[in-house]
Length: 73
Image (tube, rainbow, N blue to C red; front, top):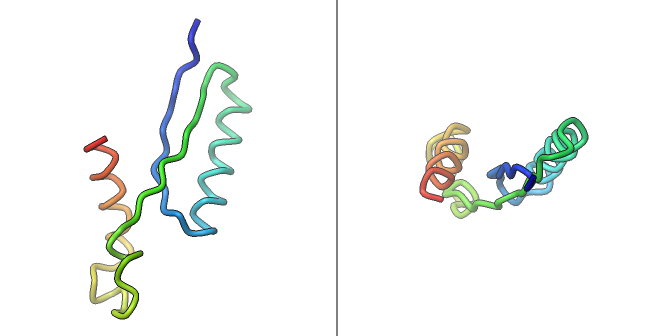
């Protein structure tokens, strides 16, 4: 049987990648037939560095953009 695949959307920052890789590793340990891939997504919060995050949309901006990008494939 072919392995099941799960894709995780993540920002490309060191912290986000560490967290996503930790989740990936734990899932693959628990489910031997699961292949997890990471998709790096650059958000507006990553691009706009000269304006405080609160003025751009707050922390939710990152999550919303990643969710929308994943839904668009």
